[in-house]
Length: 376
Image (cartoon, rainbow, N blue to C red):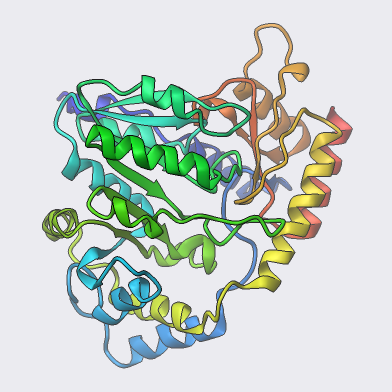
């Protein structure tokens, strides 16, 4: 029996593929250090675990409201001036939020403009909605507003941006975001902003969340997640904030797709928000220290742009590649010979690069780069 043409259009997740390779090697007893997966090192906060456990003991194990628990939705929009509870839906991580967004805003043949490098799932999620991803190169990992404007055609439905960026760690300056906002308004497009790494901006650099752009309220859809900000990757709690009409459509879709997000996990997410008193400066300082160490070590081996946010390096490895060798070939070599896992740039739409995640223990970070130096 044949499978659908829809699923035949998509590429399997390369990050998941490398994670599986690493898991198999580790299960076989090989000492592999993974710098491939974007999962913060460290425990979940005690208050989050306590609230999750208390919700379980209290019987919060049944169906709950499809758009999410009212107190959690209210807590998410409390700091925002232009949004209310009806502007939020809780989803199974930001990945499901993004998947659902394209399902409700795209018709077959519509286009979504995406700067590259980009997260592996962005283009595939557009394809699953019957749309076509239009990939636009960045300049030193920063947006090129003129190129984005030139990529807009009669079937363009949205522009998708991600700042801080996965895989590059780029943080887009306010002036570029203002240009994109004006462009979206002029062309009658949606702007989808993935802000999953908003808690990771270094060097006291200002960060602009597009939720503050009042003129975009009817055009902007922001996604976020508890996974990175609160080390809650396994909880699978994310969200989307957008126009009421979009949130209603997402709720209708979710009623058939997944129903509610895990009820007791949402109580843990609520505790995470309630326990946060402004930015976690100690945690941010820890990650900035990791960033500095990783950047220094990577710069000794590759050409590398210093990331301003997130927890990734995206070095150019052109000078290390042999004739005909791809970044995927190079990453496999490092995995087999150095027992260090990194992600090839092809997964993110760009050749001749690697993504190196530094959100690991200090020991793993140091040992991983020591192994790379020995091989290279």
